[in-house]
Amino acid sequence: MGQGRATVAASGVAAEDRALRYLQKQGLRLVERNWHCRGGELDLVMREGVYWVFVEVRLRTSSRFGSALQSIDGRKCARLVHAASLYLSEKHIDAPCRFDAVVFEGEADPLWIKDIIA
Image 1 (cartoon, rainbow, N blue to C red):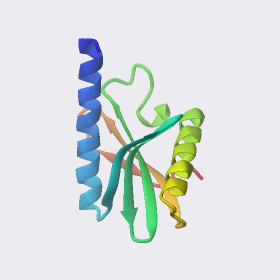
Image 2: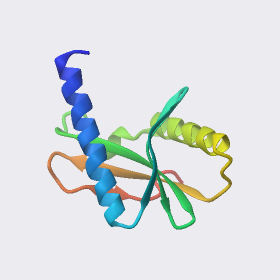
Image 3: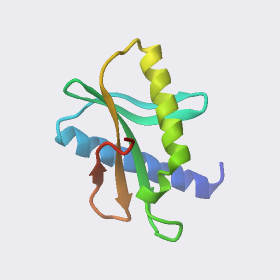
Image 4: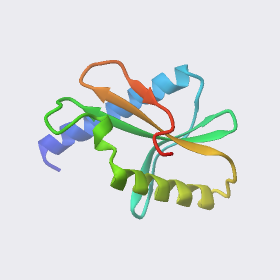
């Protein structure tokens, strides 16, 4: 892995760490982190009451290629739904769920957006 990619990966891990701490302060409980499957990944799998919450974490240090929120496009949402469906099936979970995002723009505080997929 090139040095540039290593730096990007490290900043992504740091953003996930920040998002996790933020959501835990809001009362959510971590179940799993960086769950991978064929065709997708779930950054954070959390619980909030009866809800299973699948959290996508996005960081943008520059708006050159659009905002962090804009980077969660239709294709990404489809991959999230696919991964979450496999996760729920594999774990034999039949419970309400939702998809949230925690986005970071530079050094700004996190922005938590609930129900990013209607």
